[in-house]
Length: 139
View 1 (spheres, one colour):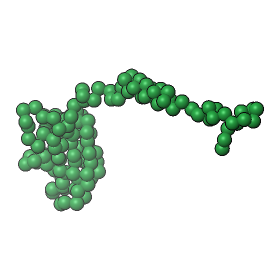
View 2 (cartoon, rainbow, N blue to C red):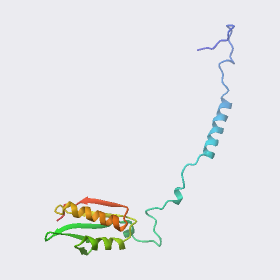
View 3 (cartoon, rainbow, N blue to C red):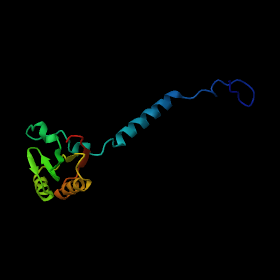
View 4 (tube, helix red, strand yellow):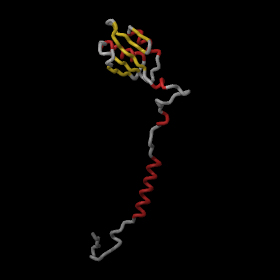
């Protein structure tokens, strides 16, 4: 399409835009937005889950695992080699454990739901912010 002026004659300057000036303006806007924008809000101050002081082992990164099983009609709470039969002893033991990584409850199929809920409440009372319930098919 050719642009013509009102007089009907061809004017080659009418359809040409000054691209050099436009490129300069685009680069200036790009530099302005890059300088004035804040790309992240203090991400360097966030704590990393992988950061350990003194080169700690992998056990620091794992959550506490509590297994709930039924033995002789009574719910047994297992943490490692410890076997607890009351919810109060579980709550006291959970208070002594580190709380940053959370706690996972692996609940057997034969455990009453009320005992699983009481264990989750004991973890809440002990100060755990991260709590997880996982059904377990193990006896």
